[in-house]
Length: 473
Image 1 (cartoon, helix red, strand yellow):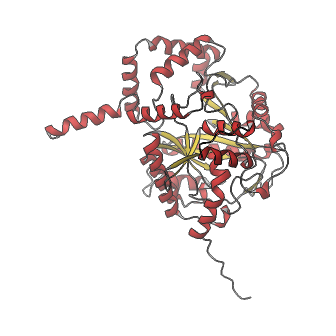
Image 2: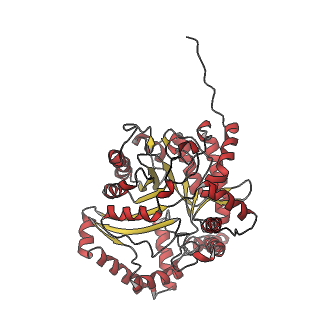
């Protein structure tokens, strides 16, 4: 290497291994400043350690199942799948997110059914997201085969394109058309299909050394809320990393709406999750956005015993949370090469050596909650040690979002208490989508409630379905 190139290489190495990238810090500070005052609490993670999740839109709006409810607009299935459009749109949307929200974040490849994309186009979209510094998660109904997964993950020579992949599969009895169980009557009928989906990723690691993060999603309505506990209990025994539940909202295709969605509250869903887990799962120690929108908790599962990662009733845990957020908030671990992560952590600890005993104490308290070091070691040897994340996302009705967003767009704070509540929740939203044509970032509820209908109507002209060719009998 030429002598004059050394300084530039060292600067790149220093930036690569800096605990928090300066662009990330600027994006976090911006996000914190934008948050409504009511969510600027010690528990809040937005603006302190994360900018929030991101998602694509209008990139592959078609789906081959029918659901009640369906968050796609009525025009969504009148658009053809086009891989070039998908990759171009993903690239443009993620480029804006990269500029505004910094070099690292989690992003969902979402819009319709991702497995309808040809595998090469699916892989190209994921590579485009990685190029923008994102850790992508493919959102799917999970009704595809192992061969399709391999075609996405492996290149033409059979070598992995990715070291790690993330998929979220949506399973619930409100969905119609799944192979093998086209009209499930109960959630339990879907358990073999849930297990089959998760097993594909265990096989992927065994067969090709590609690790994964796998989430299970479920829409909750009055028709299946009393089955949430059973789903929780069943899925905990499967190799899923996340269990996510979404109370239904009046968004999308109004032909799929039924009465009573508002009867399902975020608290009611969380109570049933705890019933299925057989224990309390406290979420109060951390928060993403507004508590009326999101509940999240991480537990360490050793065998059948689960211990919350953070105990909100333990003052030592809370003190450790506040200290570590202050010193380490903004460090990004997902998708980071091991040696880079090791140097980042080492640099952070050298800057704050007093945090070492705090981290050790936190780990010991977690171990005690999980049954002790011996139990954890035994569970690890048996392959039964894992972290599980529980999430409830509570979306809002389109009829409430539209007027609230219209006023926000004009810089007006509503005097109506209900509309003002919606504005507060939108201002604290943790799930963002981008519009390169306007330079605007919008909350997901706004995308689905306000922008999707016109967008999908435009896509019908841009990507019309091929006309059917009729033959004479």
